[in-house]
Length: 258
Image 1: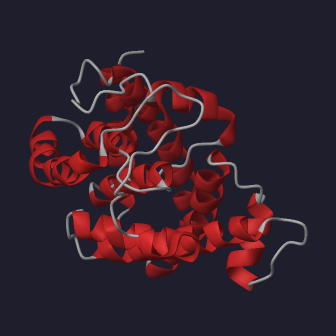
Image 2: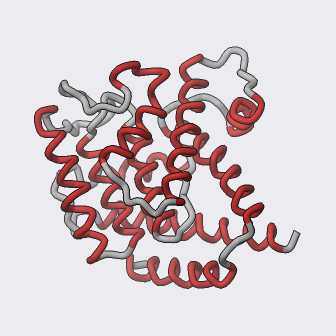
């Protein structure tokens, strides 16, 4: 199936969802609580976090830690949930993503783990284990990030479908690798912020898709994001978005008719 076909299927489902909008406040709150747990679990799981979805829920909703699991994994879950809370609140204001908001989310995500390095761009070269890809030098990060938010994102929004825009931003952020740690999670948060702003539900990437996700993400290691270079990742994210939208629509219908 071509990317255009996935986008057409996505638009069909979104139109079906838009007919049901605006959703009642209690439905919105239930959905947000559901995704707070699910997105935190799935995004951290991709990075090697050992908490199960049930353990993540127990930690975030009841404050109960899991014996035998690393403290860092608990702190990652708490930080990701706090970053999501801030993201959900920001989306309600219709404010566009900015470098400042991204750094705020990263600070919330990593402040319990990175101390003063949370929320600030890296100042040294980093290596990514399991890949030959070498991120740009730290001296280029500030300019690359400014270009992403002030030049590339506005241009992409005028030229591409929101799902493609989100995938471009996701891939570009990971390629720039602006932070010492947490870049994958930040790429997924930015992806979801852009989707939410465009009226789509957030998407999670299941652990079973981890190999496909990383393969598609690394297919374009260049920091020059062009449509022909990112086709594989855009296709992957379109399929994930379509499946996520189906699940979201199903939940909305159940909640509305409960």
